[in-house]
Length: 384
Image (cartoon, rainbow, N blue to C red; front, side, top):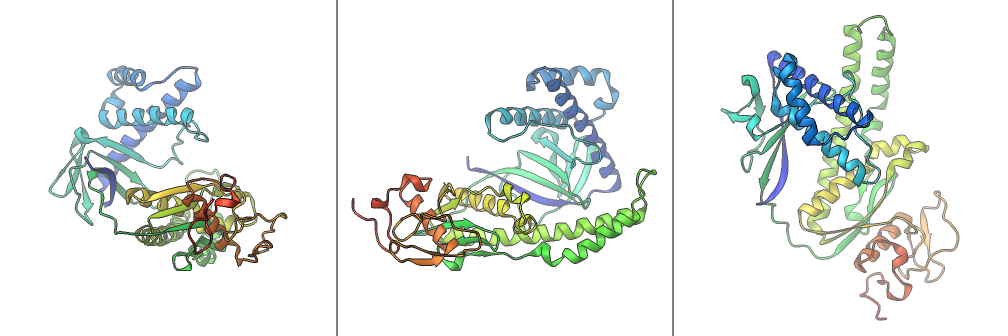
């Protein structure tokens, strides 16, 4: 059957198509909020019950009946899936209300709700939207998700089934340690992901745009002026540019790492706590979470062995003899020196070596590897 992948393309909708899509989004947003209200009222809004309520609501509401039933059903299905994941996945929050002015537009249509004709995406009610085809789809899409970003740009994300490309032969592994000064440090410096600072370079320009927004904001006195809207769009454009640069560099780096290594050991690092530290702005600029997600997805799709290793004690353990230092290392100490064997290396590079050694032994944390059966640096496994 092949794997399920997404192909995203830019849309060029006209004024009528934009109006119809926006109205459709408000209908779907209304149904989502009603499902959230059902849950808060003590009900159990399963997809079957929500579908029955939708049928009854459409029969007595002309506004809902004017919309696409396919998009409305997909909204309720997405809600029920999100609600189920909130109970099964740790840390996943329950679905919440979608405010009119803050929620991002997102519509999803299954195969019976759209078709592609003459290079255009044809939606219900006969709405045709031109698509900027940058490449060909490997097969017929099974669904499409239409979104609009903060700049007002429209995108269509098609879900298709296709064969995974054959990954090149690779031997050996690498360990990845996440950081702020260097976004990703590996066991080989050739595959490091340096901190590029795209947001930092445009910080001054972004600050000017945000100050302009503040000056032109009219408060609660009616709608905002066109000058404020232009300043807000300018600020959003700068932020979007930096985000796209980060995404591009991350994809190039992840592809390089996946193509050259058969085993990829990744530090299971959660950067959420950095948001409350003095390194919050730099950590957000580095986009550690996005880089980690991109590396994991590419590694799994290429058929590589990907191991997540817990970060506990990786910076305090020697990758040469696997001895652990007795005192805790401060963040200012960037060099690691083992008092047992005398091995010296950069702190992050040593941690990457420890992460790789743990994964090669078939474990996911340092405490599971005994000092007597560790992997020596550059040698084979030590006989026990």
